[in-house]
Image: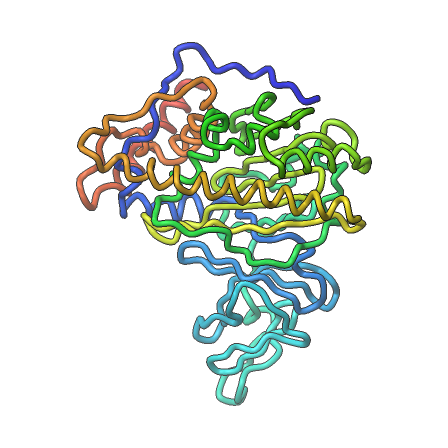
Amino acid sequence: MFASNFQPPENWDRSGLPGWTYASEELFALEQDVLFRRHWMLACHISDLPEAGHYIGFDIGTERALILRGKDRVIRAFHNLCRHRGSRVVEGSAGQCRQALTCPFHGWTYNLDGTLKSALQPRSFPPLDPVEWGLKPIEMDIWHGFVFIRFQPGPQPPMSRLLARFDNLVTPHGLADMIRVDGEFVFAEADVNWKSMRDVDNEGYHVPKAHPSLQDLYGKDYVDEPYVDGASLSIGKLNDKPRQFWSVREYRKLVSRLTHLPAPQNDSWIYIGIFPNSVIALYPDSAIFYQEIPTGVKSTRQRGAVYRFADENREMRAARYLSGRIDGLTADEDLQLTKWTDEAPESSGFDGIILSDLEYGVRSHHDQLRSLMPVFNDPAAPPAGTLAKRNSMLAESTAQETKQTHG
């Protein structure tokens, strides 16, 4: 069984992010560039694109992507921007174009490899090179079947390298061979800052009180590790004899009869957190991903999907139904907690928080934010119109100090 040797450092700073960072329009605008444009975003799984012409649309902030499987079976990622006037080439979160993609504005048509096929009334244009005027590619990497994209160059290495330390843990699941379960990508929407959703999800200290079904499932043996190089790991070993909830008892019975996975994968729920906003969860019966998509400073959409084993039998399917039921209850409980904690900084009685050793995962996520955007360290919001400049100045100062320290 996985065991963690992690211990929080002595006398660590137990405070959270300043309350203003959850309500600042200027900070939100900067986050769009520093975090969501320049970090890897989990877009989909290869099974979401089973045939040529299948596509997934992925929007975040002002960016919009199109992930597409070509006739050669290769998956590619592009900006969802027609090269003529910038219209979306496709709309919606998923679909299929069997032969080509046609812009709904003026009818420019693109091959399934992204090259320009034709422009309507081509004589009205100078000669158009099909590659130069094709859809603009987006950087892409695939890790165990999950497709990651990055709109602009950023600080992280390729995702397959960043997550390589988890390869041995996830390989038995055969993630690349899993199949998408039909259903919507959107799990929940709430009028909260995206970081509030992530804060609730980044620790297991609240499980015994807030999630009775999870406590019955694995709460007695749950291990959290903080973010290291942009990724975290949490594992809950399933209780041998859950007692409180029928769904948990029946789920445990079903899982105990499954033999397709070795230990610890066969009796654990495994969570891999990926900075800044995603989680891949591996269960004995299935796998899921979920992520926070900020749509405003106080508006967040939680997006994700569920994947089953290709050789799923009746017991696996029943177990997957029950794990989904447990997850659904947990999500509803977390959503309410998120709303309460997100509104707290606006209260006249709010004067900050204090974190438990069991909440160090929250601190480690905050530390990742602070390292990229040092303005997160300011106890009060900078004067209006100065935040980006203030952050740039702090980042430059930090870089100079680091350079001097290391010679």
